[in-house]
Image (tube, rainbow, N blue to C red):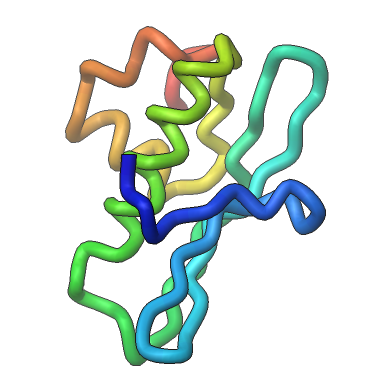
Length: 95
């Protein structure tokens, strides 16, 4: 797990602060299902793998908590397509 990524449960998002900017992957939890709604990386941090670090950490955390995933966020869906080892977490197929 990435020690720089935190799960801000009060704001329902995984966060990574870098150079004074905060990137995040927002979610909502309903029972045993976590829906990733969107991922935001500030322009100053784009192109550096920040979103991938966030999602890798988030999916690792989700797996450890026994949650299922709905990838409403296009970035999360693309990440899982590129890394099929995470597909087992999906609560429903990717669109």
